[in-house]
Image (cartoon, rainbow over all chains, first blue to last red; front, side, top):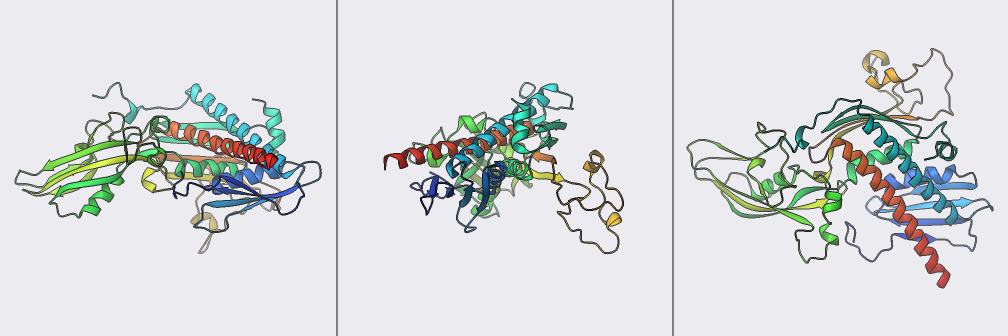
Length: 120
Length: 278
């Protein structure tokens, strides 16, 4: 269940009007700019993709529509999949980078509130 | 991780880099380079609205003879930060929990029972909240910290109540946000002209440079506008409410973003399989 309590709604719906696999609209519930804008950027980075854009149809409805149109070399679903894979890899890379920098310990640090050992 | 393949995807010269500048338990300053604005903003948004913490969500008032109304006190209690390290793993959302109302797996009970018997003003603070779970307690900086003021009482007044703290995220209510005042800055010289400064007479005196400007190349006088330029270095700076360690907020937000993408990838697969059998 999500915050709004609508249990039955699918997380992802593919809306495609034609039999053309090169274009599709992905309707994602319970997501916003946090996910959609990054995903839009990553799909657009794929040279086989001709167009990718997103919109939030109504501000009080937690839903985003992502439109993908590709050239004939790939399908919209494949482009979406690649976008997601690339973003997961990107996040992984940032995580590794961040953890490396944390391990270097070349910053000032004070346990403060979280100093459980010296706290009664 | 392969830097070269990643830079080929993202279109930047190298993979993303992180520079950690300041780190304290409740404060962090770092920069993130070679990522797109949309990704950097996604991280900022995830830190504010998607990192779960615990906060008081239900208040059962038994006695309230203070001058403050029940709902006023309930609201104040909700805003008190509770230590929420590893809440992500250790608690379930009440709406997803198997219990009918709430239970130990999705909530923590805190009790408050104070009565003023002395002939002077008594201050009720977050220190008087007694938690049933040692890991989820009101935030205090040290032993000298007086705690957060909830109400003031005169002689004879009493406040007795039961609070239920639940897990939640900032997108539902700001009380669950682990951060306060997230600084997010890029292009301190405004070379990209993403901002138009409101000025009276002179931009330079009215809009002092950000401290991040020392890390960037100053613009050359009379330089033509580069309309192909994109921002690639983002400066983050924030404080936590005390509910989580600053370094963990960043880690958690990245993990949450990754989980969002992963969930979508699985949904896409499921949708595909369904279509095959139809």
